[in-house]
Amino acid sequence: MKTNLLIATLAMGISAAQHLTLKDVFTATLKENHSLQLSRRSTESAERTASLSNAGLLPTASLTAGLTYTNGEQRASSGSVTDQEKTTAQTGIQFNYTLFDGFYTINNYRSNQKRSELSELQTRALVDLTLLQSATAYMAVQSAQRSVILAQQSCELSNKRVSFAQNRIGYGQNSSLDLLSAQVDLRSDSTALFRAEEQLHAAQIALNQLMGKTEPLAFTVDQSISLDSLPPLEELLTRAVAYSPTLKAAESEKVVSELTHSLAKSAFFPRLNIGAGYGLSNSREGFGIPTENSPTGQFTGSLSLNWSLIDGRAFTTYRNAESLITDSDIKIDRERIAIESELRTLYGAWESAKLILSTEEQTRSLSNELQKRSLEQYRLGQIQSVTLRESQLAYFRTEQAVQSAQSAIKLNELKIRRLAGML
Image 1: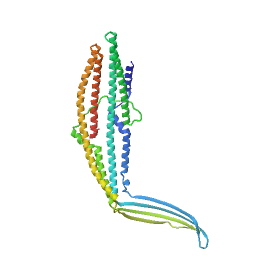
Image 2 (image 1 turned 120 degrees about the vertical axis):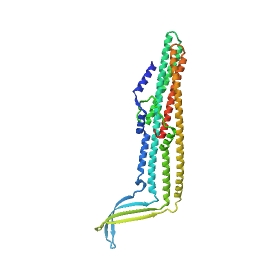
Image 3 (image 1 turned 90 degrees about the horizontal axis):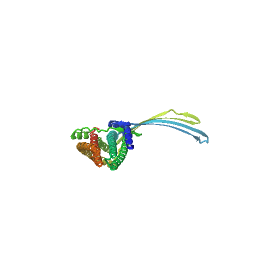
Image 4 (image 1 turned 180 degrees about the horizontal axis):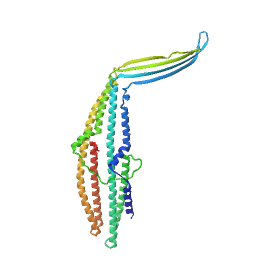
């Protein structure tokens, strides 16, 4: 009776929970996942960095102002003393601009733009990875949910065995050994149900975390797994190379390395700066009789040239920047080979899992028929409870094998779609 109540309670809890589809999970993850939010903020910061002013392409302007006050005494040669008071006000504005710096500021601006693109690619790669993690967590909830259902079915079947054994004892057709065996199996199945429910709860927590839920959300997911077809391998390879954010990021890093090389090269060129300013001053003096001078203005201009003829550190930086370009080519080749290798491996695993599923489905059909016949024969007293239990366990093993094969197909499919930009 307690076991029946437990099964009913769990079933009511599952049916009352909110239902989530994989699309719902993707939508919540894209909107609420904290890692994605931080990555987007980092991209926005990189976009702000890629500005003309930050690269030094705009002139600088500064405004200065000051006020000086002095108060003292002036002693004449005759011995007389006169109070001295002076107030001076000054203000000015200064403009500076770099006319030429070996194209440093221009290359710095281009480098910042490329780094902004690189940040966007890294965010896109993180989005793909996070969505795949969410899909994997969703499938873990699916698997745990199906395990709960199987455990419930196992408990129901064990309950039937207990009822059959009790009835047969009442008719004097059976010993108490079968009843004890059925009761032991029922307790074992009840424990398995508790464990399955615990695994389901843990899987739900993991998925809630990826969806950025601050409070636990009770939910159910689709029981069936939708298995979709995929394009041919060669088409997928072409798509993966064209889409891959990590490969594009490696290519962007090469451009950044080339611009870094140009930045280092600018140290060998002269720097030409121009400046202009205007200042205005006014003073008021007092030597017994206050005197106020008229405001005076002054315009200034400057042109400066700076050329470092010998700088060993600049030469070392230049050579290291050359090495970064070669390293970038190696990284691009490595990334391309890694993408193709991973895709070929996943595609082979996806095809193998489909073959395994076909075999396991046939086995499940046979195991289901065996379990039905065994239950009928046990009811008629033609087989022992041990034989029925074996057929029951065999069916559940094949059911789990089918679910495992379906999950493997779907998981490999999602990984392939992620690489090919189809997720």
